[in-house]
Image 1: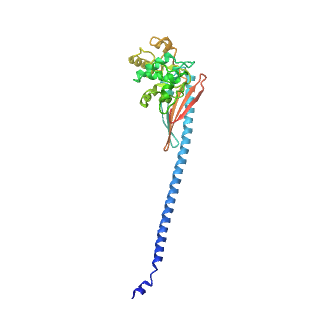
Image 2: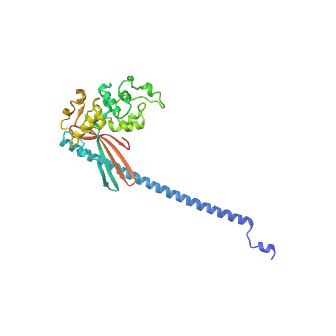
Image 3: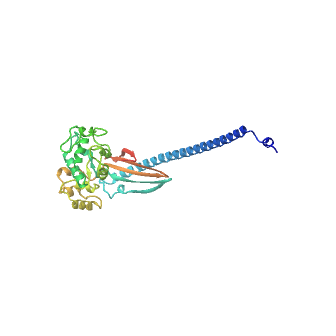
Length: 318
């Protein structure tokens, strides 16, 4: 068989090339279709997960608000049954993880008047209160924190723009920072604002936070719930041994007669700043539903009439 007869049954070279291009094109199209299908499937899956997470988050928030209402009723009942607040009462017990549909809810209540109120550093006229300033200095010293932060904090909340001597800080300090800013010269709404103080570091603030608060106006300290450091800050002559004795005395249900107990330990001026009942509490509620977890912080005010209302809420941070 000659060459011509052998090639007679084969397609031309151009045709074979076209068939190769067509095959590659078909493979590319199939690949693109597969990639598109996978992308659409992945996006649909992610969208479904986002939607589910949002639904769980909304559900968790509603559970947290329900827990807030429940705690409010507990605090109202507590006031109706007792004129004092101490760490032996039911509100002071940590709420264990309780089962809910698809998850758990837990929480705890903190007596905010067992802490030093930063806004006590100024009086009703917006001027620095020397008695509160000295107490804050003692509190800082008991926590091994530089007492100069007391003067810096006082300048942060007082109404004038004159730096106090020797530890004050006003516009001249803060406007020289990068980025520059100015002190608000008004009461704090949250202790997190202390992070902006000149020289304040995260580690220092972490040590200080359990012992300070930012409450509306001036408040007394509830000696039945005050922290060790706050009790020691009440007077320069109070020793650690004295405070250990005080905490031991209040363990069974608060001080039987706090005024008689503290009359010989603190000055008459300081005695008027003490109390055995509380108006402000902080509720922390943690809700876990599936993979969604939220933390609600709620500052609750309990009036003399027994009404309990949230005055500040935040999700995730105090």
